[in-house]
Image (cartoon, rainbow, N blue to C red):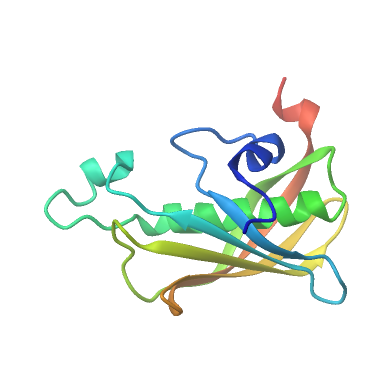
Length: 151
């Protein structure tokens, strides 16, 4: 059972196909000292990026896994009360790509708050498939008012 379904995620994140990379949120823990979130991305052969990465042996691009982790972190930021702002990618620290993600995999997306402020912050993230780490990184973000993004 999900805490947030795809329609609720679409109300929070500005991303749309093909760049909305979180299908559902399974858990949200807003308690201090380490608020966290668990999301899910169902990786299917229908993903547009598999047409060219790599046609004979499809692998989800690592940067898109990082993007899915960042989007999951962005939902956590929103749920922590920053509803009038959007989290924008600022930096990536200590990224490690441990194993490939392939069509048919269920990518579990975990983000834990390290630092949150009204200007931005950082989340510790991990993407797993079958309880095995595929990608991990710390992601820094800036918080920008929505009207500055939407024109």
